Length: 315
Ligand SMILES: Cc1cc2nc3c(=O)[nH]c(=O)nc-3n(C[C@H](O)[C@H](O)[C@H](O)COP(=O)(O)O)c2cc1C
Image 1 (tube, helix red, strand yellow):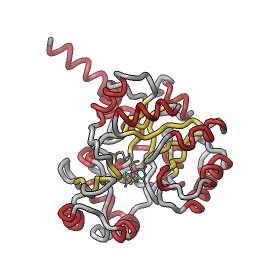
Image 2 (image 1 turned 90 degrees about the vertical axis):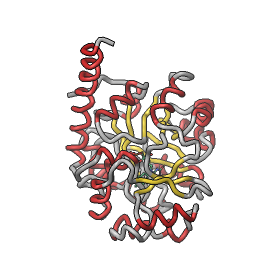
Image 3 (image 1 turned 90 degrees about the horizontal axis):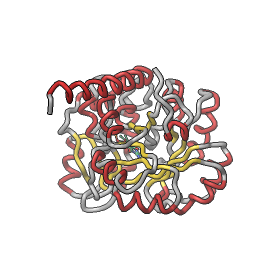
């Protein structure tokens, strides 16, 4: 089944408008290429700060897939401007920027023929990005896992707030892990989705099984927002460790530095474990291909069921 070509699909050049979130250390070639080969759009991260390794992963992609993929540039964490040049020279055609001023590299990226989407967490940030000249927005609601803006606006509200002011292409992120939530985002004006937590809990995800199992087991109330005395806020899984940090109000650098012990060592209390409220929709560790096919099927089922529910109930 093929979705009609929309603006986001035209920009991405893949089969389904389903993007795998950039995630430090996790969004590397093994996961991203699996997403690309299943018809979605894989992203390579640079937020780990391991620029050389990330560039190597970008080059590895050519060995693993012939499909298009993208790279994320977290603007505030980019210590070296040559990273942008290196990403351009690697032949990347789609970049998402996040965490910073979108106007910083937009001209350099656009001059290189790259499509640029910027991640936004509020209408104000969306308006700033549109003014800067981005091609589209990753509309990131408060439900999502990872770093969060204290604006704390939910995905559906944010999609509607932006669409009421602008016709810019939008990709919805945060709180989406199945085709039903995808359909809701499309009804609100999105032309694509980005999923992080769902792909962390996939067979091809490089993280430890303890992390995947914790996501699959978690229910709707089992994430929490931490670091609220500081910035950025962070949405993480509820663990004994994150309970202590919540009390404390801020996350220490040593905690963040130990995150790979959670990711790859499976020591769930060694650091924080990013995850979104979408854990409520995830019960099993599935292959990337199964995830994407299920989401696409559910998307069409959801649309049909929603129309039927409306007509059957004679509002
Ligand atoms: C484990 C994990 C790590 C993340 N790391 C990053 C990151 O390094 N950079 C970034 O821009 N976003 C990061 N995010 C946020 C995602 O890009 C995305 O916005 C979020 O996953 C969407 O919500 P969802 O998790 O409900 O799908 C991370 C999210 C998760 C779950």
